Image (tube, rainbow, N blue to C red; front, side):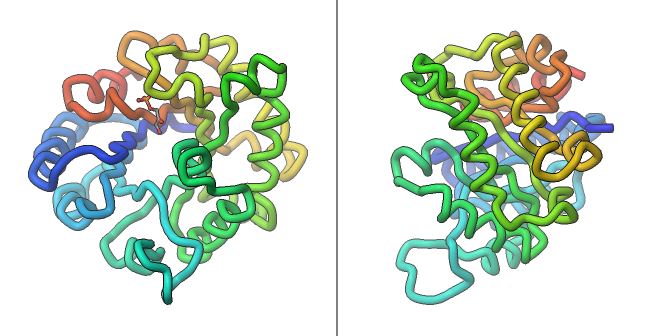
Length: 249
Ligand code: 13P
């Protein structure tokens, strides 16, 4: 059965000392937690946070990585560098990467396959813009991002894939998708995964929800059949707000 998976995406927040302090608080707060947990600090704080979470029940995640293993890619960070620091998970295709930095599905797919080749777990983010939802295109956008993002990924490699449905209009806005609306897209996405890989694979894929998830709406979201966890931004920046989400169940 699927396990709840609660992940914190710290985005471009925290100095090194702040990141270490938060990681230490979470290690102690979550040591008896029953679920799967991950935190993703910025690249510059990965090494320091790695020392704190090593050997605990909190996975270390990166927020992005390069399409290439090494070479002339000024400003990029490679999968080999992440692995060397102890990173276990990488978030790919986040809407901020797609929309601010213009990453397209082909580029994201290259990254997905490279991360899997090196044994990293991938959280592949999908989600529609407000205008796409209003035009009735939420499902078709998510389908395209899922199919293209996973193009060439084998059924065997799907055990290292997590999907995060993050409706772009709900990120950092305080607007959450209703549990029913989120569930509808999650169920639809699982249907696409069933079409691509068969039901035994699809039933085991964790699909997280992301977008203004907080302690007070986490339970209603996590109660939905196909919502298996959360990818949390703002509420992951303090132990006081992240811990209750992690301990919803
Ligand atoms: P918020 O929780 O701040 O809406 O961010 C969600 C998100 O983008 C996580 O990746």
